[in-house]
Image (cartoon, rainbow, N blue to C red; front, side, top):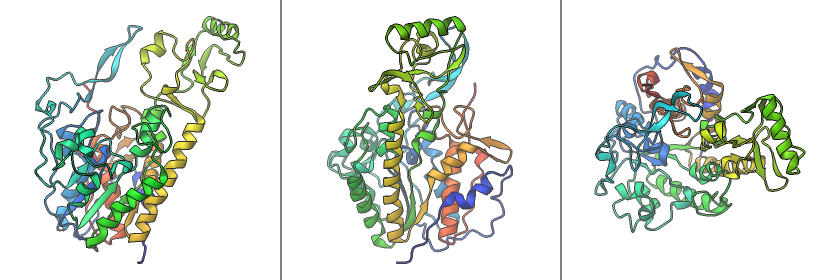
Length: 438
């Protein structure tokens, strides 16, 4: 089978770096070589529209698959049904909003807080498993989970809309739809849980904090794609970005331990008394101190990452990271970063090989995230991975804002237009909301 391979950002990065919207000069919309009459989106929380640390109705309505379906309707696309929640308070817990909070030093500033609004009916699980849905995004799902019978018993998001949550495997649910066109964006959770736990999980395990064994990943991913294409369906396979590039890992400066000369002297004496002569502070900014199994404690080094889950008040007022070393659960060391990148590359090779084998489009989401890192503008609005103010990432530091999801939708459209010789119009990213400021 002839293979046509597309690395998205190589062709789109120049457009995205411009300060003007270059996506307005399309001719009559056409489907090209694809059939969009039944589009099905398979994926995890990013596909579901998860944002701000929760799932909400408005998040689902602003999911990238729903955005794609709107554009597909211009070229013969059919209805797109989502397992919508009844409200937007957040389910199963309140979403984050931006609000004022006072820290341990008495400084009041804006930051993520649980939604203070009265809970709406989204507080209910609202089980709706008697319909066939087009958006099959399941927050928390791994490729490793595709063959687990009764998966809905373990995952409440799956239980909401699986027809038989206690009996079905995710693979069975995903394949029941027989789409004419599909997108698959799976695999992020197969490394993300390990990363967000500070590398506390195992390699080859099935737990939330474990990295999936590459052979299991390949077996399950290939099984999914091999069956999706049996009806001559076409689609886009999307790879896994480097998870350490997202704000969850890049927001807290590793050199953020700012101390006075007096505090530096006191800290140096403290660690000298403990026998750690290699710990040295000076007036001004310093690298935080972290736990290390080999040498006891040390300064965090370049190429290592602090997690957004570190309690801010503990850093500011209680000596965490200075007088008290940061526990392992709050950072990724160089070995763990290398492990994450190694397995991400292995998983992405499986995804790319599946695209090559079946002649499917392949979108390099990793390249898209790298383009975000350098920043770009859309009609004068700048986007970057900066937490809160960057515009693309939501308040949990992992998932996207509606504008961020619109950017992803447009990258997928670029892939489809190039690979399947289609002419699908793009979304105006700036019409979607970003972070809402009070």
